Image (cartoon, rainbow over all chains, first blue to last red; front, side, top):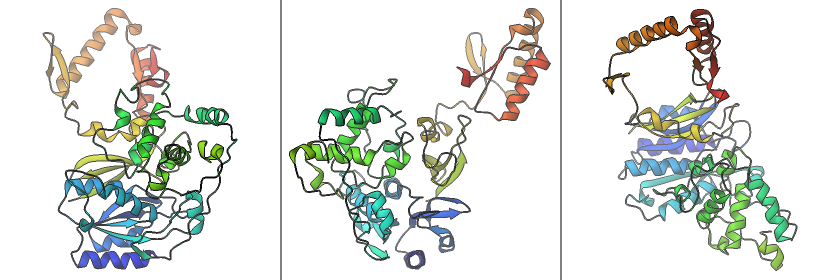
Length: 264
Length: 135
């Protein structure tokens, strides 16, 4: 897959169709974000797989957003998995002074293997702009264990949410987070500089993620407290009845009222 | 348009988390934890996530400041160091070695911390040495 993508990007750069290609570069044991402008650099292209598929993923769409804001008239290529493409669509739908326009972005996509899709619980582990790889079937939904008792459920979540140290890692790494005035930095919404931090940060962010979250899982990977953020966001989205409209959200048929209330 | 992701170590505590400092045309725009670092494995604390903020911050001190006639004035490093050395000597003469105290830091290397305690104990002759991590 990597070779196909390298060739595709070389072609785009040679034809002058893109200013640069937002992707990943491997140097020795390290994989990090990079904007390729010279075809020679593509020898170091990485898809974000070091020891296991997808173990070195970064918020490339976030990086593209930052570049596009500074260079609104340039066209950039970007390496995308299924989740990246969903994030791209969310960002393009944003109403901004310098909008991220579809004619300024050339996505070059590849599919994720079934194991990774399952681990991410991804409904569509391949982008429409598929340059390499075959469309992998979506993950079979793992039903999260629910006790059926809402109070007990909330108790369990309470213990988990109290682990939050408000490092803001989830917000900082999120590829669809782009608000100039962030809700969780407003005293009126989330008490600032309060120790220990109240779970209001997590809940407020979860509400904000309804309709935006693409379930890429970068937040969970960035959380030092191992909080299952995707599950939290799914729970809140479902509770607010919005998940079926959310980009990339997993559509689960509602069964019993008890299960749907507790997010099962 | 030059985007650079420079892999570096966090300047704050002794953990030594690895991250990429993101810059566009020489201006720092953000920080991304290194996914491949065995130390932090793609995670950072709030200080690490914002380490890019202070480097080119307009309020960052660029010159030593010395209080003259109640006002903080910009001076050269030589003047600042000469003044500091002279005053510390004077305080040691008049108040004894225990009139001075030393505070070590996680922001400097183990070797520098070793030198500091040597200065305190062997140089000045006081045991008044502690470390910011104990605060």
